[in-house]
Amino acid sequence: MNLQDYFSLVFSDYTLRNITLGTAILGAVCGMLGSFAVLRKQSLLGDAISHAALPGIAVAFLVTGAKDSNILLLGALVSGLIGAFWIRAIVTKTHLKSDTALGLILSLFFGFGMLLLTFIQKQPNANQAGLDKYLFGQAATLIEADVWLMVIVATACLSILLIFWKEFKLLLFDVNYAKTLGFNTKFIDSLMTSFIVVAIVIGLQTVGVVLMSAMLLAPAAAARQWTNSLAKMVCLAAVFGAFSGVLGTAVSASQNNLSTGPVIVIIAGVFVLFSFIFSPKRGLLFKRLRFIKNRRDLELHKTLAFMHGIAETHSNTSHPHTVKILNNFQGYTKKTLKKLADKDYVSLQGNMWSLTDKGFEAASNLYNQLTKSNNE
Amino acid sequence: MTENHHHQIKQSSSTKRIAVKVDDLTVAYNYKPVLWDIDLEIPEGVLMAIVGPNGAGKSTLIKSILGILKPLAGSIRIYNKPYSKQRALVAYVPQKGSVDWDFPTTALDVVTMGTYGSLGWIKRPRQRHKKAALEALEKVGMLPFKNRQISQLSGGQQQRIFLARALVQNASIYFMDEPFQGVDATTEIAIINILKELRKANKTVIVVHHDLQTVPEYFDWVTFLNVKKIATGPVKDIFNDDNLTKTYGINYKVSVQE
View 1 (cartoon, rainbow over the protein chains, first blue to last red):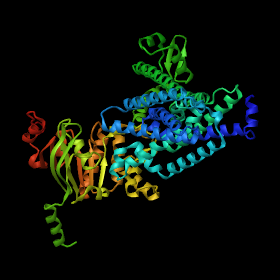
View 2: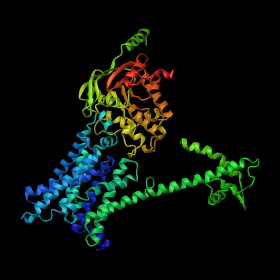
View 3: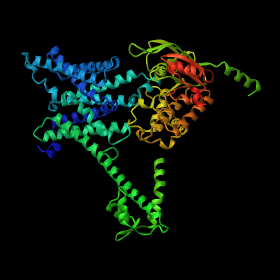
């Protein structure tokens, strides 16, 4: 199947439609909530929570003996929440830094989860095969019921976001101030963390424990580059997430069924890379270009000022001087001289230069302009 | 207003109401107390500086009064009622460094946060809240920067944004944590003008302050703090070498500035 086939089949084919819808919704939800995680400087929280969900899946299977994905995800939810709130307890009750707490919970829970998984695999239960899909995810197993679950979670998440928008923003920016205004910051914080856990859990089946945090972080990190408004950032992150989902599914379906989760994550990564380089305000490319342009302007101005200093010594300011004299000035290059001539600031005659009236005036105004632009 | 009335007001100002009353406040992060058994009465309408060396617990005192930190012991009363019932009367200007200024938001948006307390849960700011925020921006001379992304502001401008956010709360008591730290002359003057205006309106202002030289000039009340309360009272009575030496532990000569 090529990309064209995919787009013609996506509306009619049951499996393809489920996978596409599922990954798109998942991407949007993760993008929205990921924005909060990124702005709280808790980028690793998602990673810790998704790894912490693994033992929950294993325990749920051991207890019920069934492979109903809803029950397994419930187990993931419980152990993910335990992990998340443990991290918070460690940070608030001890003097460990949050990255230490995150790393600790991540590896402890994941280790325990792997231990249980290997234990399950050694059991004579025929049902046990396929639990490892939660490690790297398997989008192909999405069924309509899963998509509905995602729709419900997405709706709940969006409603909470709209209802508590003001409170979320306040908490993200200045938690202590929020406290003095009388807001129950613990409640807002728990609400936010719980929704991040829920988003991660519904993504486990598709993207898996190991890659889940990228779904959370990549769209948000990309979106941050394009806007300075929280609302726009959250929306944009949702759009990036959804597009990563759809494009990832399209690529994976059209290229010999490459594993969907990793492809989605890589596409989200491409969004990040593109944003880091090409965003007009914060992107590396335009920053660099602005830097070079500023430097060139400065060089030009410095040369002009130097020439102005020489021209001033003469009663006739457009009296010609030799080019050699400019070698005394460190920043001088032939290129700058030519540029100044192009701007009609300087007239060149053989080895001699002289300031034009326009050039002299521009040079005298240079300093004033500099102080003015600094005050603005 | 009659002559008699005037007289009454004058008289009552000499027996001022107590705006903030702190009793037996003790705070500890680990084992070592940061604040030990603080008793403090701050009369209404004063501009009070809290001075003391680094680690003396100045910020901790403010944060404990505001309920940001949980004290080991002690009680806080605002106009003779528990703080939790009097939040609307209190505004807070945190240290500038306590937040991430790269947060995606504008100056106006930050100042509007000052209205969130009176709005309560869920309700969104409306036109009149925006208007109040714009007025506060005007007061601190930041109106031209209202739509500026906050990371694009200078340190002094950011401080003025925080000040404006507190002004929007229209409180009776203002707590400010080092508002003068690292600001330029423009901002310092802007802050002082605001302080004077607040005093004129009989508001109480409590400021964690580092620059001892400017204490007599800016403030009329002072508290010396070094884990314990050393002294509190009118600047003209207690701002002297003796108290400075007790607080800072070195032979401090305040008379240098005269």
